[in-house]
Length: 126
Image (cartoon, rainbow, N blue to C red):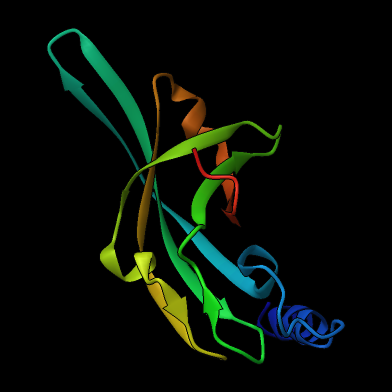
């Protein structure tokens, strides 16, 4: 597994120059599923899926994360809104080779969020 990860990273880093690419194209997102949960207040409720997320700048220059957001996706392509995020993951810029790590929690009104298996960085933030 460790060798497979190293080969994957080597392949990504050997890709054509990422120098001035948009943040989502220049940032590697490593995510590990965490706890499932729920929140209820009166008659309202929603479910949550946590991820431990690490963002790594794979570009050769500093990049801006100012207009980027994290999105969780299911295998079927359904997206889930970010509910709570550690401050470290909200950095406005990321220096070359630098990384930040923290928790991100995504939410849904039904249990579909439990099927989220991928976290991406997007520039299509609502």
